[in-house]
Image (cartoon, rainbow, N blue to C red; front, side):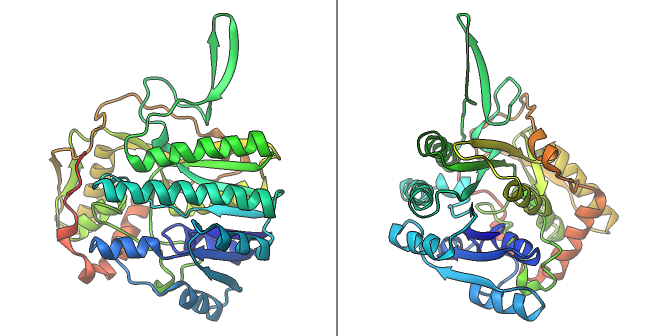
Length: 380
């Protein structure tokens, strides 16, 4: 297939590009380096320095990979995005191109406004570019399980059937996002649902849980590693815990630590995206999958990392700190996730060996760890 990856420089975008390229797809990556720029502005660089996209593509090719096309530009510029879609004539567009951090969106008005304007216009333009230039192309959009919040009922995959006064109707599942970032993801979903219903576009919305991990089959060289963050703004919780364990910094458990979410290995993100491409949504269908493989509380993750780290000879402990976020710390959480399993997902579960491998990888780069980036500074 011909695939365009919006946000192809990011933690997941570049790994996806290599994964699909290795499987023979014709891949074009699009990025404006927003994620790198925001990290520099906040002085929160990724653990491993990686080359720019053009350099990564050259390394990928030299190591035996296939060609990957690069387009540098901002997809909130509709003319630019329209030219990319017209030239690529894609069968699928994978949309990662958003400001990805909840804490970043809650710093202040300026950071919130950037999140809203970038994320919503990126999705808005992607919808119109497909409608005008490639109407048979499927959009695969990376959403988030954070859209749902923590309701006191089971979380279904995207939709909820409601019985009311003797009648029944299926609605998009009610959303209660906990940050401006998550709110933009909800608004993305509404826009995509509209585009499927009104313009007959084929759209798959992948409500993804927090991702962990560094290694994929294709990243055989550290120069091809993902943009792996461990700080308080851009780092996901398990990645942060692993780096803290290596740096002998107490694991920062927010509040009671009962916050429960669905998690998945970066390898499974690649699986899920490929499965969605190979079995696309129908024209006029807004299909929603909950993209995670296991649920854990923050305490579960901390205890697992502490145990494996101690077995590796590290001195490590978990420490509860005041929660900087307004969120439930003890709640019901039972989300469905059968859709991707039915398509053939074979989960890579969070074993001791997986955590030990992450620890060993981070230890090779431990000289770059900055312990001053690990305590939360953004509160809401």
